[in-house]
Length: 412
Ligand SMILES: Cc1cc2nc3c(=O)[nH]c(=O)nc-3n(C[C@H](O)[C@H](O)[C@H](O)COP(=O)(O)OP(=O)(O)OC[C@H]3O[C@@H](n4cnc5c(N)ncnc54)[C@H](O)[C@@H]3O)c2cc1C
Image (cartoon, rainbow, N blue to C red):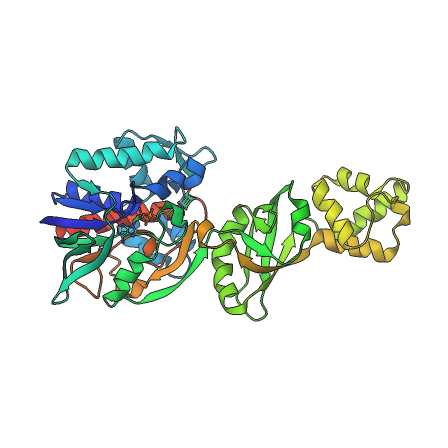
């Protein structure tokens, strides 16, 4: 029998296994898929944005209302500790922009190989193709897990099964279903960090351009304002890019209840009055200059986007500026300053990099990550109801929670 059995060989499970073996426990990791760490390998486009340089207090705020749940895990294994730990395993890290932290070779494989090698060196076992289908619980204590091939006894169990985004990389709902089957409450799951679909067809015609520093906000009367600023990418079906990935975790729960929502886009960093003043000045100075030429000289809007905004207010970019009457000038200035799209859906679980929701934090002790429902059961990583924005937040949480769960399970 093993002291600790860990379900899932993602970053949370592998870090838990290293922490538990380091503390002297015998450890077995059961991984349902064909390989460990498949999401870790794909993270950051293969470059693996492992963490960031934010102080813990600000880091936790970015997870929303329940971010402080992470305090004990981050106290033990914050960004600095993670970087030191990876350094000891031979993976140096750096933050080229002062914020996002990557391995210096920008290769997720280095991080995964280092974890797997360290665990083997410490004597921990990883068994692949071993999906866990149930927990063995006796008198309110977990005594092992059940695999398709039979029962595996354990002193304690750590569930580190991740969320259900990207099923092609092992995402599934089995972890929180296992927890729910043993009395844990679940918060509704929604895809996060996912592209959005819109009803309008004009974004498809802006596809060539990324809009830097786009300001987005959700219109909902009487509700808390949801907004964000960052790079926006137009796609064939809607919107993507870092600002959308970040906002999507707030938007998908609204879509689930409201069906659709209106999103304001401020893409040019100028107000309607500023655009109007610029247009009036150009029209006076160079009345024969075309709308297209004027737009390009402003350097405030990419050519395809500018052309689409003209089209939306029935202005032809080949017209000379003198042809624009007051009505057209006002409409064009308004459209360039702010426009709106109707978000009707998202790209689905297949493309969701994180899961919003999961096992309720009310059923887990933050200081050890032990379940309040079943003794000797611990939970770590994305399957808990915590998700952060883009930028190394989710991996940091997976590593930190894995470390805390592993050391607690070994001590318990
Ligand atoms: C494409 C992509 C890019 C990303 N990029 C970043 C990034 O750059 N930075 C960042 O911070 N975050 C990123 N994320 C998010 C991050 O990868 C996850 O939040 C993180 O991997 C979660 O770690 P975890 O160990 O909790 O779960 P996972 O990594 O999902 O690992 C869980 C493991 O458990 C296994 N499992 C599930 N159920 C069972 C079962 N019943 N029995 C046995 N095994 C089971 C799964 O096969 C899987 O291997 C990205 C995610 C994706 C999909």
